[in-house]
Amino acid sequence: MKLSEKAEEILEALWINVEEEGRAFLDPEKFSIPLDDPAYAELAANAMVEVRQGMVYFRPEGRNEGRMTIRRHRLAERLMMDVLNIRGEAGDYKACQFEHLLNEGVDTKVCTMLNHPSTCPHGKPIPPGDCCTEARALGDLGVVPLTEFKSGQEGEIAYIQTDDSKKMQKLMAMGVLPGNRIVLVQASPSHIFRVGFSEFAIDTNLAKEIFVRK
Image 1 (spheres, rainbow, N blue to C red):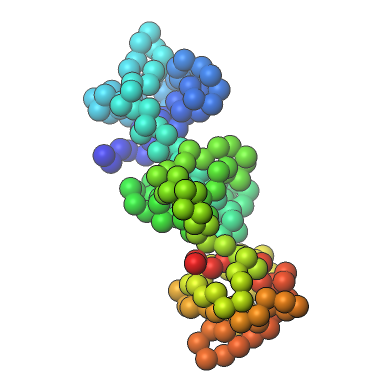
Image 2 (cartoon, rainbow, N blue to C red):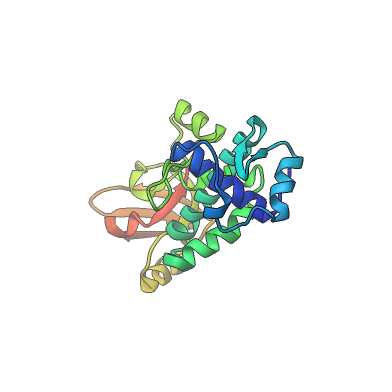
């Protein structure tokens, strides 16, 4: 079900109030979206919330939607700050925009790429999805730094995580680009890897910044 952005924001606030802070309801007077906003009527019409005496309560149908909404928001925060290195207010703003694009299925792909994180960058819990439960049961770590590979292991480059533009340029010149296949030839004392028909040696610190999907 596709909800408006304001409706999703209300569900997020309600989830935080009820599930994380232990309140029974959301008080719209203490929230940025006033009670006369059509988003409340939208949620009520979809049997997700109930408004009683000016307070907003979860209905059972809305609780799971709230859980998934807050999950998408916090995964978007991780993506912006950990992978795209957009931090601070800019990271929070971009995450708020991007979360609405993480429809069913896309959030699973992002979660797997991020290695099924349990908390957002602010330390708040990310409700686990089915992909998290399955990965933990199978011992599948998803996307990991190259330093966690053993000699001879092969994978697909997922992303590079570095704040240093010179390091980024160096790795890209080696062919370390998302989607390319990479083989770890040697893990010690330096990390030697092969991309295509070329081999390169880098130190451990640089190898930690290459994230690979097994």
